Length: 511
Image (tube, rainbow, N blue to C red):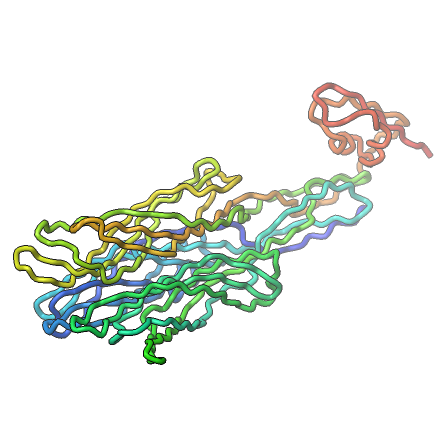
């Protein structure tokens, strides 16, 4: 009787999907002696996204910055934060799975009460990538008793997932005539990920906006914009260039510390950037399995099973220009000077595959602080406005399918705000889109072979087989219970499969 082939088991990620959820959070803070709120920004950070039974536990914090003017005309800054937590049902993913989450801010409203209380309400959008974990059985067959049709199957598995804290430092020269720094806004742009032997390298850029007062009689508010590029290396055992890494990096903006030092009459600002990265490292393992098999001596039956898997089919980074203009609603007020501006957040509202392109639509939110002049009162005041910049673009990517899963993130690269007319502002920005395309696929594996009795084999010295269209030498050899290589060698003038009806012969040596 023939030897039974080996049946092995491999850990696999059987597929992935994306769960989206929205949550509203509210918080408040006291602003002593407050007169006018100039600007409010919030940066949500997802600090934990992990499996808890059949649920996903999400925890994080929204870091809030408030710039306001008090009754004495001073500009004041408040750092606040609002913790949030959410339990998400994993649905069909119940059981073993890995997850990678992201959170974005889609709406932010605030109001100032008579009791110096600033109330804030924000809407958070969660996007959670869920990778199912399972085991796949597959057959390896190296026995001479079997004729096998090999099958190279690629199974995705998770090497490691986790979180890590790190920090970067940067120095910038603000020049002369600086009285004090009010605040520092920063947006993080994740430019790409490289995988090397034993490490994952994340390429990033930070766009800074430092708000400060000039040392003049009006304490004029100014801003200094600059970019800082850097790379962060995370060591991961078993990581090699064939692996695929997905990561979400968050800037812990409430901890930004700006330390200023007067160096030869020029103000040198030193900034520390604490960050948190969530990552998952995936590996595609090639398994030499069996697609089909037969024995020349025994009856056998094969058990086939479909195994879900996913493939990373695209990863692209694209820079896009976006612009808009904003007009003041009050016709009696004009814009005298723009003090500062920062692109706080970008909300992607639509991702859609269209042939060899990905359609991306969204809204960017720009916070602008300016000086206004009231024609009726002839007074100048500081004011702020949150400008919405809607955009729509197409990013070229090859070999896309309609059912592909799109993961995307947008980052601010640069922003410019100019006074176009007395009541109108032009806003021009550059954003970076990072799109990853994943595809769920089903692979067929033979997971069991059952060997039966010795079969009766035709002992004729000469066999002639009439080949029907689309049949292969494998199909014929299996029917005749002969070696496929020997059958093909004896019929070198017949090319299969064929659209015509052919005849093949097999001479059997009789003992």
